[in-house]
Image 1 (cartoon, rainbow over the protein chains, first blue to last red):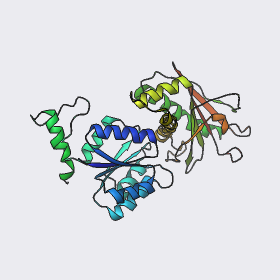
Image 2: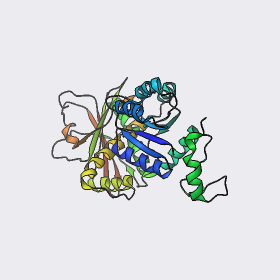
Image 3: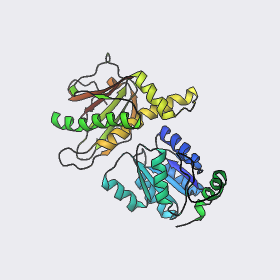
Image 4: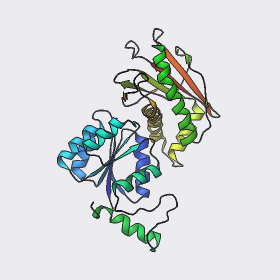
Length: 154
Length: 162
């Protein structure tokens, strides 16, 4: 099961992000409120995925991603922010992020972004929980395919 | 100067209304923009504040009537039950996240269309606690819903009150 670090200074965003990710069978291994905490937790827990807010106190998300990339080249990072400006998107990608989500974050938006960041993986549709591409029972697929997502490296 | 504030406030009002209607499914009616000096007697609660940085520096605050804010909190919590001690912090974070979403989504320099950065939001509870300087140009607007109003205020930095 992919292990995720959720980084956002907003309690309600961390809470709802954790809920959405858990529903998609990701394991949220920690939460951080700013870039500094994110670097520390990433170094300690080596997550497979980080969802990273950009505007945060103490250290912003783009700076944190640059620092994380100095010691972890593999972790997938998805930025989340209320800013939709092109420059912000480009800065995020240049700093080493793989994806970008514009707030407000919904389950559908998160799933669509995850599909782009993990293109080889197959996801269960979060709305109807109907899996496409296999005849296996939903529960079985949920266990097998989602659990192996992190092993299918791009 | 007032024209710039108005040009900044209009898209914030429009985004607030569209966010209410499209994301929160609450019907919204936009009101005109006016100027106002907040006093302790005009109580606008559940407020949060942030600043823009870059080519234009302004403060933006958004506050809510109680019933509307409770409705929004309910939507954010999606039916989850929350302990009282955590609920206070969650409500503050929802107020902050709302101003963050609206301003982050909508704000840009109206003169040259360049982007403006925003600071992390700060929960201030009562809008008059910072928006009460008689010497400042403060523009306000509101959006009406069946649960109550959202109030938005914008002004240039004023050191005396902050």
